[in-house]
Image (tube, rainbow, N blue to C red; front, side):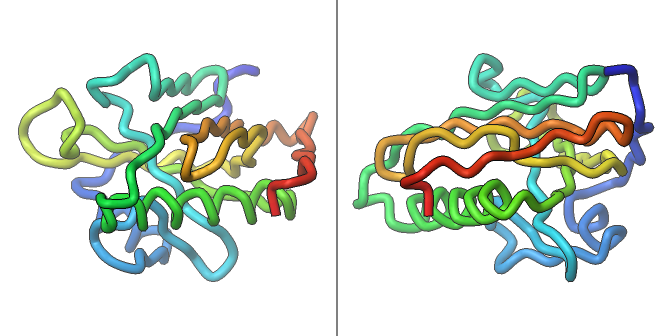
Length: 157
């Protein structure tokens, strides 16, 4: 896929979410929502690069979310919240948005959180695993000439 979308650079995550009229349940939530779709974030400078791969030109983002023990209740809640939003988006074939982050808590860049909005529409192309076992998801940017279809696998609902 050729580069189809420019990035709109914004000073912070909260400013980026305001720009697209999205809200988070709380400031630590890993997912936001507009009136029409979920908004996912990609930490493009995450220290675990092998588990967080973003390719703007190809229009792809892949993330592996490790399993978390139940005693980490707040983190486990956010892992489940993200999974539920991905699962709904995936199974319903809904479009979503992607906000790119650098300088977040797991990032390698200093100087605070910076954000960029990929103004294209994305879909969850693949979702494998569960919050208990860990999961992997792939988002792909929609190419208007060849829109992908997400297929819900049994057992995900």
